Length: 412
Ligand code: F0G
Image (cartoon, rainbow, N blue to C red; front, top):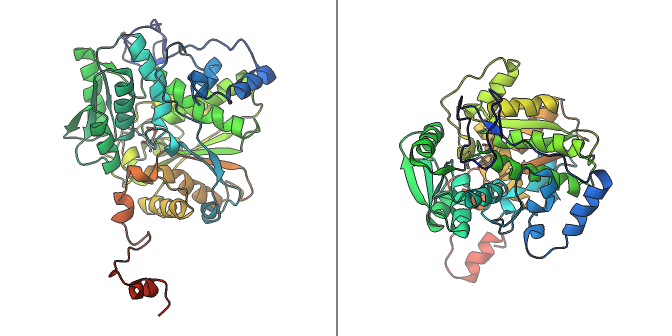
């Protein structure tokens, strides 16, 4: 691993996830794959038929592009998520050909499982005595499940009162020690980093470079599903910026391995109330000003993103754009995606809200090939539906009579 700040080298087999010399984030140095281009595409395609083992995983199937050891992995499997037309939500966004890649259909309901299979495999390889993360909910759910699979004790730090019900239920059910921290996500992450340094637990936040290796496969699998003809744009919600970083790394790796020629442009979308990255972009990335975050999209309620530097690189390398959208726009987008039968949690809908804004502003042409990544499942945050009757379907409570049914059908 190499420090992204001071370039110090650290053995890939160490417990460190940040630089012991300067505290900067570490990056794994990937070896170029032994196979390239057409032969590599063939290899990936042949593995698609696997029904068990690491080839059945939509992460490990692409191991030639991952800087991680693929022996003895902790896998469900994960990945293998569908890329589908966005149906009526495509019309809502003003982009008739819009497709979505639904990462909510991973084993614990979010894209985090792709990074966690790699991170937890490494934790087991290191014989970590415990694993930990700070989380707005999804990382905690994923860490708890994969730690249970690996048989390693897990500790999760989550901001009290700011995590959606489904995620909290998962962390508890899968057996993680769940610490409700009085503070926001950024405070949780500082605490988790301190716990890793002082108490010797292995940190599995997305500052851990092994996590990002797994998350790269969202893009690689998507490119394969596109027949290696990349879309013009890939849109994603952005919080702590691990995923934005991973997407840029994946696209560059795919190009360097001769899998694609052109890089799609990344569109990273934040919520207005938690938009330090979008503000920095608007100022030419001169500096990052941390904010006190406040958005209904709890997954991306983050004011001091840890992977800022590497996410800036992703945006620069892909000629990308970073914007923010209002909570109202996010909830409207979520209702459109839900009503299309696809469904997602609020933060995920930021990607579609962002595309609608970009089409309205004339930056994305309505006919352009765009893929939005839906990062989490609708059931992660059921309250966002049932406590938001203004935007969603109504309940009809009736007596157990046929007349009651007739009334709801509008037949009387
Ligand atoms: N979408 C969902 C559903 C998320 O849970 C997250 C992050 C993001 C988007 C943003 O990704 O942080 O890589 O920019 N959730 C983290 C967590 C912070 O703790 O579960 P990012």
